[in-house]
Length: 592
Image (cartoon, rainbow, N blue to C red; front, side, top):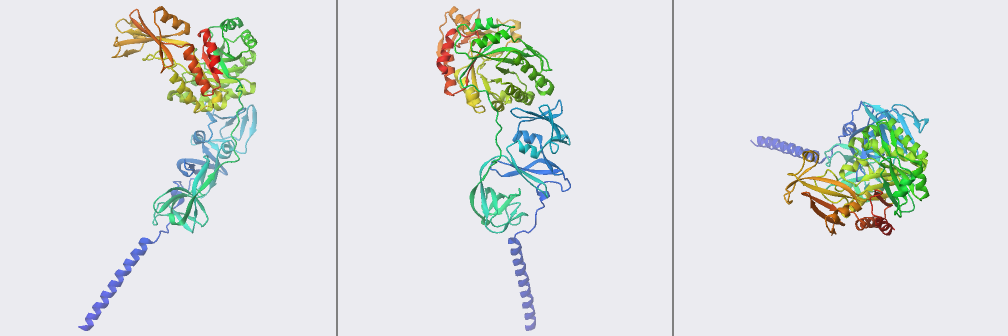
């Protein structure tokens, strides 16, 4: 019996030892850090056998590169970046011309044209050669040579293999980093059981993305981003990244040292110097006149011209510079087709330069309106290329723009402000023909907002604000008396506060003198509206109601005050012949 009890005790002891050993083993396994290593090809989501793909690590707002699904490509020793990636993030002046299958790159004075899959290209009209293909087409997509892009863009990069990965840097300044205190590892996730991505050594600096309670998200110099135990890192410190070898390209400008006081001169035909002299009677202070002379007339880039040499000569004797205006709204043409096609775009520029030389112009004013969204890239490329031609010829280039809105953002004022001499705000048409609401042509708040929003993208020394010399007279036509033609062509307004309830809204643009005459003929004394910065009057005639927000010397004076307040380059006005003579003196008094 005693022997049997001893045997049982031994067995129970062994069981206890086994259980205890298993528990210890479980505890050890539970707290033992994993030594399993993550496969970097899997980590970067790249197939090991796809030798062309290069992982892109793009810099984020905290200057820490982050994963991207977009891939670069490599051929031999060369790496290529996706075209859209380059233009959207690093250099917008690469332009793919679909019509000629050519990549175009512009600087202040030069135009580069790169054929696909070729190491030869043209610089202006001269054939040149690069070390490799600058542009490649891969699986139907366009790629640009990394080193060529770097040579003309504010970027830096690091390239590593196994797997192939590229870290691109383009934002400069301070970021957080920390020094490794002792040997450790970076893991995929924050936890000792997570797979190992990379080893770290003492004194190694890691960029800090963000902190958790016991773990820190970091990135090492090889583009490996993961988690490290906080206890392995020293205090965070400031790091700095910059690109000291890069210098922003210079775009020499013909900005005048004096305030611009410009007026457009609307032409109904060819006019000589006598017409200008007559129109300028009583006008003082103006130093630039912009006649509406050039019209895009077909989709091949041809122009109709109303230019006249005697007009220019007379302007010059009067001390006026002449900026010939080109527009796109008179003839039935496709602005998209003209500007997105290299041949028509180049022909259009050649025509403008030919006329500028023939008529001794001082500048070109571009007034392209109703630009479709699909014409955005062709439009700004046209402006770039035209700026090169004007810069070479010593011509001032100015661009007329709508007041900034979401619907006109595709005009790319920021790029205009870099490559052209003057960006003109057409500070009017707050309310216009065809709208279902009557109102001011250019209230003071509308003008101020247009200036402030333009200055977010364009330097003040290049901004000209244009004012209206016309007034729009709105006419409310009761539905009951409207003709069938009016019902078909005019907007119908439902207004519960109006005595008409439902009416059609029509309008006409009249000169300052005509607007004042209309109010006077109907015995209306206009009332000052402080909020709008204008006088307002209304009257009833022939069963219709007329509403008039006047432009006069007082309203124009307030607008000119804004030009001085914001230290703009000057003033423009639409158009010669519509202002009362007293306005010119007011402009001079308020502009300087």
